Amino acid sequence: MIVCFVWPENIFRFNMPRIYKTKEGARKRILINKEILELAVNDVIEGKSIRGTAKGYGIAVMTLKRYVRKKKNATTENIDYTPNYRQSQIFTSTEETELVNYLIMATKLYHGLTPKNVRDLAFQYASENSKKIPPKWVEQETATYDWFYGFMNRHKELSLRVPEATSLSRATAFNRHNVGKLLTYST
Image (tube, rainbow, N blue to C red):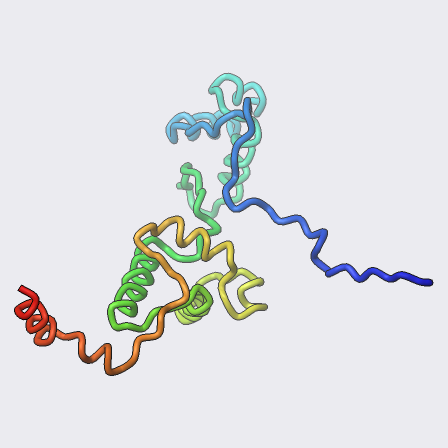
């Protein structure tokens, strides 16, 4: 007797957690003063050692090395010495606010959107605005679950679930006149 097991392809796929929790004892990210960083970069470019300069200014060696490379490869004299933590974010905060306002307006018009609809809408919005779209979005022609999860975490005022069906007669009957009549009869 031969027994054969068929395993799904992604049963062993490792998924990264959506919310990263730092380990105990891990060093926290330190914000570096722009002026100090600029002075350190200029010292290295003038000929001082990277390690000695980093130790003298209290900056991580790789951080200093990264900004020195950035300054050497820059076409202009001024470079930005601020960290860019939002480089992988697809929409700006104003664009996300527009998307949130649209979702709220659609809900008020009794056109509830499912999470899948919101992901499709986000992909279309990014495509129309010529945003830099991740390859996974292009492959699936929709935004990823991770983007949606992050979007919902950033906008707690939204609560998207599978919408309840609203008939046309019920939607049109819910107007100021009928609600006023209901309130006058109930008192």
